[in-house]
Amino acid sequence: MSKKTLPFGKEKLEEIIETYPTPFHIYDEKAIVENARALKAAFSWNKGFHEYFAVKAAPNPFLMKILKAEGFGADCSSLPELMLAEEIGVVGEDIMFTSNDTPADEMIKAKKLGAIINLDDISHIEFLEKSAGLPELVCFRYNPGELKEGNAIIGNPTDAKYGFTKEQLFEGYKMLKDKGVKRFGIHTMVASNELNPIYFIETAEILFNLVVEISNELDITFEFVNIGGGIGIPYKPEDNAVDLNIAGQGIKDAYERIIENSGLPELRLYMECGRMVTGPYGYLVNTVRHIKETYKTFIGLDGCMADLMRPALYGAYHHITVAGKEDQPAECTYDVTGSLCENNDKFAIDRKLPAIEIDDLIVIHDAGAHGHAMGFNYNGKLRSAELLLRTDGSVVEIRRAETEADYFATLDFRALKNFPITMEK
Ligand SMILES: *Cc1c(COP(=O)(O)O)cnc(C)c1O
Image (cartoon, rainbow, N blue to C red; front, side, top):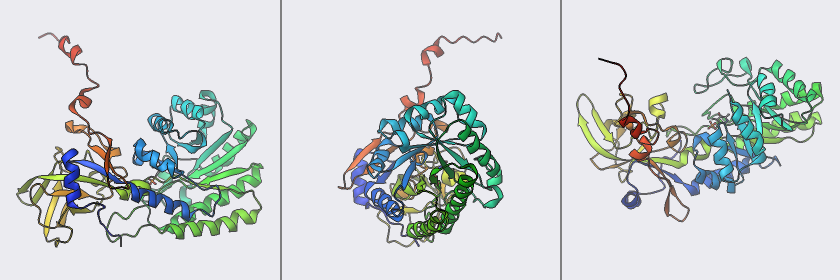
């Protein structure tokens, strides 16, 4: 069971709203830092342990700067994500560039920053060599295919577009060795939002065994194993968070059994978690605008699926708290909706909640990853602000809300004025 509590009460929210109107995302700095420390502690047995925060989960440089101070690097997969990392001074091997279908300019930027380039396909060896030149250190992403079952978000590994087959790994590392590459890493990631710690132990075992096999066959030395992200979060109150110490201890045992026993040199363990780093510590705060009674009762919020699309996209559950009514019984049934002209713009369907009134503050939990980040402008919706609840209780805006001017910024209205209609009547 996970406790679904808020780091602020209704009064605090009302005070925040005087400056920053709803809807907004707000992140809890203290909780983010405490969780980051717990993750590091669980893997501290590995001297080279390093977490690369998957920037896509919450691409806000203020959050990234907090994580940098905790020693986290950045896992990037696009040029703007690389630029965000550079902006906060995360460069060199503190960047893991795990991309796919990658354009040449991104390879060039990653190489320039000295990032660890994690190739998604064997054909990308030549692509990288021709576009940016081969760096001294190269990593491959492995796709275990039928060896491992995926889960709902990523799907079956054999259907997944990511990574090398096992045969391609041997061939690829041999090609690198022949081309003079001296430093090697290996990566895999085949699940997302996984709550079973055993899963991560098995993933590490697969990579440790591959390292032994490939090292022996090709006579190359691996420096690190990157087990990817995918640690889930307890979205539902009845879910349990991944016990990081079970995962950490299990991977340690596998490391001793497989790597230490093989007599290979020490390996650094890398992770690139995103969701679990910020997800549970971000909240989407909305105000009730309308209450509509037809065949059902609909609560209309000022926030919509452009602020958090996971429920509409995956049918995902996000817990909801009505601020100030935490202790009232959940005896009413509501569809909690936004204003987008899409009937799936619903944060919750048939959700039991305390009786709701207009102007109530509705807080949606676990919006700190893939929340604001997945925002979009369809239907003329503007993206909300992002706020940070600091450790001293103060609140700062770490990204302002979009305005209509932002929405129109890519249009040229002057050109429109002089725009002739060419099709004659
Ligand atoms: C999304 C992603 C991650 C982070 O996954 P989480 O489930 O957020 O931990 C890590 N690596 C890659 C390559 C990704 O695409």
